[in-house]
Length: 202
Image (cartoon, rainbow, N blue to C red; front, side):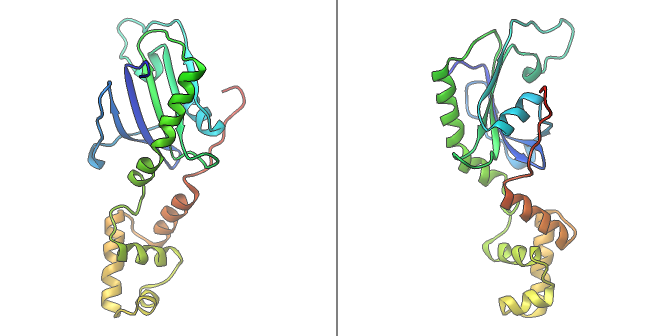
């Protein structure tokens, strides 16, 4: 339906992209262990900042002998932010074409709609609390509010040993060491990721 030789869907976390799925015309969702993290290119940052699709089309050839980086070397790349209308982007849909190609306005509208439809998938896939069960999520929220294990035990009406075990499970599953780090994860989750800034001239 849309001209492309490669695509990638990424979630935004801590100002970087977590690659969730990619392929060359066919779907290829990545398991968490396979996911890579990459820095934002200036055009990717611009698309996120402006909350609109950004594309570059040039007459360009990759220098001989160099290692090809499709996002930097291909002549046609399109970045479409993944977000619901009026909300901050949670990720990016990136599409690349190996040869010079110019997307029309109709193409941009269609790709923007596709990117918007990916919001629920990207949000769920990048949710830092995804590994937790429902009771463990409650413990994580209480930890994020600064409650201690005894206070969590009282709030959830469980004994202290059970609360301490639940706190330990939450920290282990989230791969963090302290309640402060849980609070930071929850803050990013509530905010939809950190604010992005763009320097003039990008």
